[in-house]
Image 1 (cartoon, helix red, strand yellow):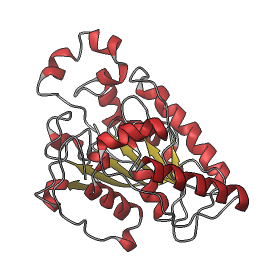
Image 2 (cartoon, one colour; image 1 turned 120 degrees about the vertical axis):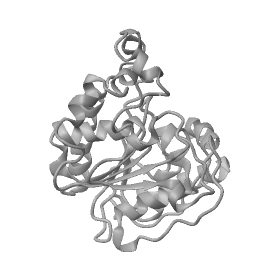
Image 3 (cartoon, rainbow, N blue to C red; image 1 turned 45 degrees about the vertical axis):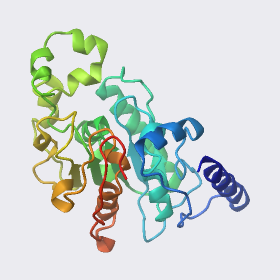
Length: 289
């Protein structure tokens, strides 16, 4: 599988060199719906296939570039080996933000970095706005950008996979450790994402959403990180519980960005006119599929 993807990546790179700045069009990147394989391929593809082609120009069918925002550790390579090629194959210009802090960077500076990255994407593509797709912590980074850093005027749609929108109690452990200082010193964004934290109070003080942006939240009943799982949902958003669509989908938090069902929901959020129901099939926790 890796050799075929290397060959595909080389062919696409050669085509870009020959063509120069190219309009986005459907590609043939392999899509890996498998979290462990995605982790392995992140070593081979630190920039996920299909992303960060700064010569890409959006099409009339998909006029807004898609910016992918990763979860804790800030690694685009870890999170987007499925979504990036899938979106590129569907004709989107795809850009992956990578803050690579290994969980040490607080959410506010990570959001400031996202603001700069989005400005760069808009300048490079000539687009007037972007769509955001996030996983886990990336969801609150994106929301902070929208709420406090001027992102609402530059964003049309946000699709969140397994976001910690109202924090997590982490089965009660988070409530006990929220104010002990140890969690914050060991992992600043972990402390910020605990239910009731000062960050969560600030993020949600003015409501869950901002005017002019379309929100989709995609959550799993079997999320092992976010408790209760309902805390992911936003008032004013299109909230999707994966198991309401497919009882066979047992995906958890860590693999939810490698779930073809959740990624079908992402495609639907980005292009509602072409929306279709996800195909129901077994999806394994820790794996995806």
